[in-house]
Image (tube, rainbow, N blue to C red):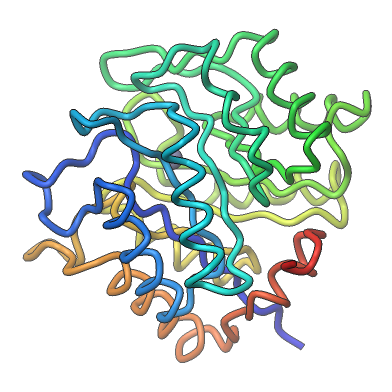
Length: 278
Ligand code: ZN
């Protein structure tokens, strides 16, 4: 039987603004609305960054709480994943909202250069975020911007800082991180399968590489991520109308071109070892 595909939607991110695409949801009510549309199109995980009143990425727990409550109510069973990403956020506040116990949270297990900045994940911060996720029973999504981050993940599983099985995301296609080359993904997946049997993986491509990575992941048995955080375009010629449009595209591709059914929320939770929704 083919593995159902879990579709994650990254609705906002820390950088995209209305000027990039008016469909980018910025306020919490806009984010909840956009998430519901994406959920109805087949997304089972929502990855979220919240913004402050000026529209900048922030760590305000009250925004995270309002978002989580809205999505729990309007998208029954959907997995809520908070970003602990660093852009525009003080490292001391990056895990402050984990006490709200989202189903999942992102965790980068190393530092990397992004265009014009260092995406800094000090070893101590990585350890602290991982410890909070264990404490609050949050499933991490490990963000691998670089190959070393996969081996760091393995070490953290061995030392008990991460609970096995893990969920790993391989990211491609931005200056400073890995280029979108299929043989790199294949190598990563091969290493992943040896090191972390029984764990799950997904892949994300930035900008025009979003669709490319969706296709490779579907073919290689992984899960997928789409959404306006990574890419504000539907195709070269036009902007995406919504997060839901990007989700619908990958859902259709999964079923029609790759014979992969779209996972239900119950299936996604089971595959990721996340407790059924309350
Ligand atoms: Zn993000």
